[in-house]
Each structure stands twice: as structure tokens, then as C-alpha cells.
Length: 97
Image (cartoon, rainbow, N blue to C red; front, side, top):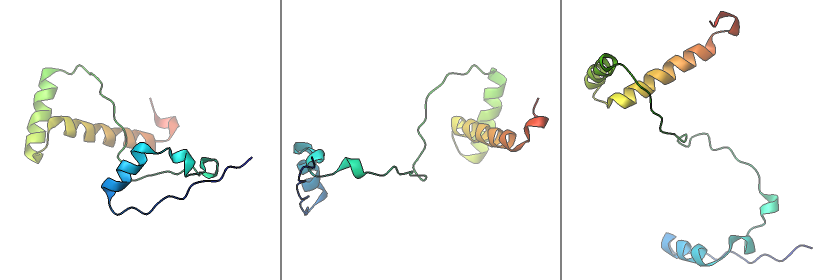
């Protein structure tokens, strides 16, 4: 049994739309059984905080290098990790240790 969906009104502002959806159930207006899975490739990937113990000398070297680039050392560390992991992923499996 299909139920009749309500028509989504035209909104004069974003604030009006926010107020509307905060007091109405979207399931009354949208048929989610026809929804398609979408990939938003340009969204910022989600991150998770981890704790890694590093030698103090390595942290100092990272800070020096980051200072030269005028970026936080944590950002530099993340960039270096991404570079190295991508590099390793491009190596054929037979060459990995």
C-alpha cells in the first residue's frame, strides 16, 4: 500500500526551511524507498584521534620542518604519513617486506 506524500513547500529562506524540517517528519514528504546511494567524493574524510609515542628528537625535527613550511607539526606528520602510505600501496606486493 503506497501512501500519498505531502508536497514540500517552497521556502523563502534557509531559516524558514530549518524551522519547517525541525517540526515535520521528512518521511511524510519523501519516498525513501526510491533513494539511491550516492558517493560524495569531495567531502572531507572523517578522522579519528590516536595516540602514538614518538621519540622527542623526532618531534623536534618535525617541529623544525613544519616551522619552515609555516604549518603545525601535526599537519606535517599527517602529510608525511599519507605520502608514505600511498607510496607503499603503489609498490607491487612481491616487493613489500
